Length: 557
Image (tube, rainbow, N blue to C red; front, side):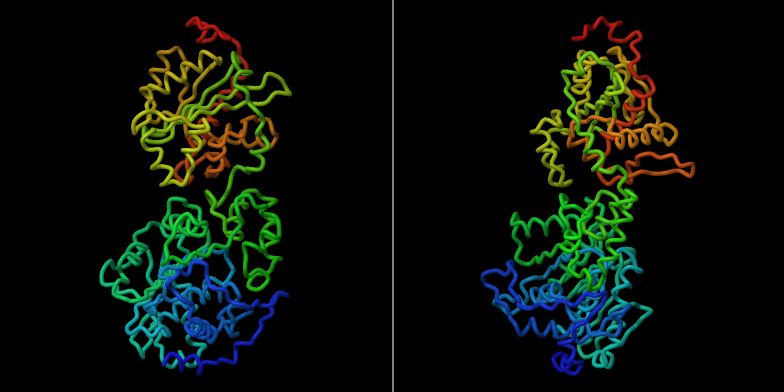
């Protein structure tokens, strides 16, 4: 029945070439089997041809392409042939999970809908259960609506398929199979007998619950279930999507092996020039076919003029994982302030400390800011960071952050045990006070009571620093101003750089700003400590009045 469906539906479409925006649809000239095909598997051309022909009997549903045959672009056909044509010795598909990560406007929704219909109507599976999953019902409905329109435009399918629009369900009557929309908002945890799952925009999943329910054991009763995961890069590096992205990268780069997992990632590298059209072409395989290069160029120009749009451009147009949708600190400007800061040259000089304790199991940051001595001088920054020794390896694996490398390089220190040893840090700060004229230490009131008392007992002037808009806004704005003017010097400290890149900024109705720890997906403790210390350094400058160190008789070198 399925083979008849393909031939009935219109094989005349095969040689159709679509022109749009000056671009020509690229066809796969010569297929080369995927490098992830195992030794015992074979490429079955008939199975691959069948899948390709089924999809190319469908039609596009939107915009300029609406009503035109769904001709697979070369990269799309490569994926379909790899997934549906790579078979194990027993004749079933080798891959049961496909992870496709690609920028927006590359034809994701159309490809996902086509795969959903293939699994429902053309895979020869009796009573197949195929689910379309997304973060919410509205998002999940996008692929469903495309699939429903594809059915309506294909006479052969339209005769055999019943569309239940209100239930977001498509029924293929010859095999009693169905395609059903589910969302993370509401789903049943029982009774799934899955043949296929299409996860659209996996990066928007609020947690891993739906993903785990749909992919962990629900397809065990089927011989060749397929979990088709298609997404753009996200911002949350603690999400199920990023976890899957890391697995895909590990497989692509040879660090891991999983014969059932098929990875495809189109995107720019972190080191690539995001303004370079060559980079755009590398990251966007459908450029000038489904999206014109003029659109990408316009978005790039807008991001150039407004740094707040840079991260959105990187994420959506270049498929780069970014810390947050809106990047506050322009990192190219921050990197221009990587002037060398020599600790020995600063000994005896006035400075101000910022202390952010976070929690006993997290990063503790202490930052010294030295005000300039003259107009040619800069605000010099010396940051120090601590983590519990026993949790270091766990954090590296969990957060995918190179804490271990930073520790070996001396940019981060560890304290004994599984919690931060505040006593060690107090002793460390006391030793710093013997080298530098620490006039004040600003601190976040949260969780700092005991250490503050101990530091006061050592003779330090300790200043509580509010974390609201009123206190944080002026120094935060000043930090940006000094960065843009290249009046900071921070030696390119990698931990502090990472934290500056993590900052998410909140703005109140009056235009005041502050760094938001909750919205920032990664740690920003060092940035907060820098902002607090900078505030005191700007307010007090190189005031050489009576010092706490004079009172306690310390001598400076």
